[in-house]
Structure formats: structure tokens, C-alpha cells
Amino acid sequence: MKKFNLAVLVFALCVTLSGSAWAAVWNGSIPPVVSDGDTVVISSVLSGTLNVPANATVTITGTATASMLINLNISPGAKVIWQANLTGTTGGNLVIIEGGGEFEMTGGAISLTGMMNAHNTTVWANETTVTISGGTISAGGTATANDGEITAVIVNDGRLTISGGTLNASGTAPKKITAVMADDSTVVISDGAFNVSGTTGKLGALDFEGSAVTISGGTFTITGTAGEIAAIDIANGPLTITGGTFNIPAGGSTIFSSHSNVTLTGGATLVNEAGRYIIIEEGGVFRVSGNPGTLINKGTVEIKAGGTLINEGTIDNTDGTINNSGTFASVQTAAEMGGTISGTVTPPDGGGGGGGGGRSGSSSGCNAGIGFGALALIAALLGVQKTRRR
Image 1 (cartoon, rainbow, N blue to C red):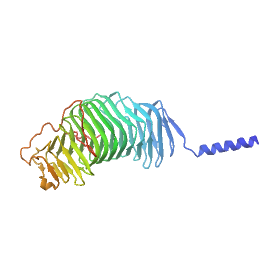
Image 2 (image 1 turned 180 degrees about the vertical axis):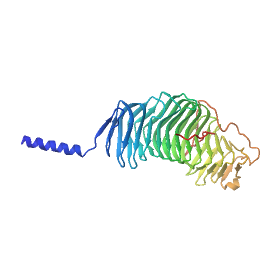
Image 3 (image 1 turned 135 degrees about the horizontal axis):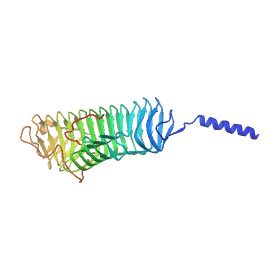
Image 4 (image 1 turned 45 degrees about the vertical axis):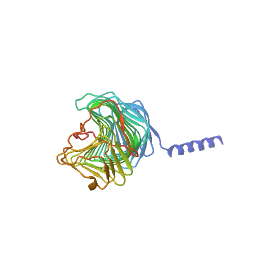
């Protein structure tokens, strides 16, 4: 009887183990081979490429450091769920994500720190879906090259969805420091904390090129010293704003639109605080929708080089300035806009002129929020020369 019971116990144990996913350890330069349902526990010092097969879901946990970049090759239909803590101390990219699958961060942290080279990015994704609902992604340190940049997340030719978590970018970099950059991608931001600080040529929370962007929430905070400070730089892609809270220093810019349609809608109220700027140029359109949308302008709106402001909702310009300083710019009258507008709009070619440093806004320290009621605003890293991200 005892032998029979022991045999039954062993058989049951084998059945249980064979029917369950296993936990693999990644603690060096050779990642484990994984399949659907597996958990990878990271430890020690990592490098190498983790390959996730098509249609598999793999969870990554644990705590480790990286002496050089690591790659996640996520095949189409596959997903990596990130809950681990990873710190990298060398220059360049820390985590590269490719393969056409999905990277989902629900917790943990990924942090790039220390002395760095020219392009220093914590998470860089190409032709991949990135979803962030929790955890922290940070980039910080000193970029030593003349064109040095520090960025928390870059997505190229993919999809980025942020509904929570924290993204930090800080330090010293000659060129720019940015929380999120996306090129030729679809971007949806509904929540999360975006913190940018440091000393650089340009400080910005969000930088988009050729991307379709929707912002319905989130808190965007910029502090530091830079030649140009802005919340969002949008070029060659539509941007829809229905919510959010933006805090930037006086002299910084709220919106920079170049060849882009920017729409304030969905009941949102955008307050452009005193000393802040909205810049519209190079075919850029800023539309205050009758859906409704409300712009309370206490700062300066600059219409430049073929830009257009369209009001179908409400613009309160009583305490602010709307200038038409571009040769080919056009500002519609209140009647042409079809909405309501209070205050004065300088007419086209009417000498509206400069309006003070709208493009850049060198500033240090002080945050006076660009708050939104149901939303807060966006902005622009003015005059950025687009060098696409690797």
C-alpha cells in the first residue's frame, strides 16, 4: 500500500509540473528559451537578446543590472509583460524592443543612469506596440557628446499607449531632454506622470513627428534651464486634446504646431497661462472645436508662417495676446470663426509682430502650471530640427 501511494504521488506531481509554465532565470549574456505562459526572472548582470515566439505571452520579473543594452525580440502576436526592476549604468540605449509584438509594462522600473554618450534612451521600440499602465521608466545622467540627448521612451513606426505609470527624463545634455518621442506612430495618452528636468538646449515632455496623437489625461511637469522649453512639439501629424495637466516654466511654450492639425475638443478647457506661448506655423492649424472646446489665453498665441487659428467654440483672450506675425499667416475674425471670442486679435498683416520670445523661452526653475480644467495643455519644443530617432 505504501509503495502504491508513493507511485500515485509521484505520478500526480509529474502531471502537475508538466501542465504548468516554468520560471526561467536570466542572469547573464545568454537568455533562456521561452514559450507561452513562462515567467523569466532576471538577476545579476544582463545582456543579450530574449526571443519570444509568435503568440506567446511571457512575464518578466526580478531585479538586475545591465552592463550593456539588452534586446527583447517579441514576435508578432506575442507579448512581454514587464514587472521587473532593471538598472543600466552605461551610455546608449538600455532596452531595445523589436519584432512586431507587444511590450506591456504594468509595474517595476527601468532606469538608465550615469555618464552617457550621444543618444541615451531607456526604452527604444521599433515597429512594436508599447503599452504602459504602471511602473517607472527613467533616463538620467550626463550626455557628454555635443549632440547629446536624454530620452525615457522612443517609439518608431509603432503604437504607444500610456494609461498610468511615471516617465522621468533628467540630467545634463547639450541638445535636449525629453520624456517621450514618437515618429510615424499612433499615440494615446490617458494618464500618467511625465517629469522632465535638467540643463540642456531643449526641455520637452512630448515630441512627435508624423504621428497621430490623442491626449485625454496625464500630468506633464517641466523644470530646469534650457534655451527652449515646451510641453509638446507636434509636426506632420494630427493631435487631439480632451484632457491633461501641463506645468511649464514662464517663457516656455504650450503648443508648437508645424504642418499639423491640433484640435481642442471634448469639453476641454485649455488655459494658456501668462508668460506662456502657443506657436502655430508652417501650415499648422489650431482648432478650438465647437464640440465644445474653450481656450483661455492669458499668455501669447503667435500665428507664424502660414499657420491658422480656427475658433468654433470659445476663446477668452481678454488677458492675453493673439499676434499674426507671419508673412503668410491668417487669423480668422470672430464672425469667420463662427464661435465666440472676447478680447483683441491682431488682424492679418496688421503689425501684430513679435509678441516676445515665443519660440524658445529660456527659463529656469519655476513652474506655474498650464492647467486645464477638464484638460490641460500641450506644447511645443519650438523650432526643433528633426533628426529622426535612429
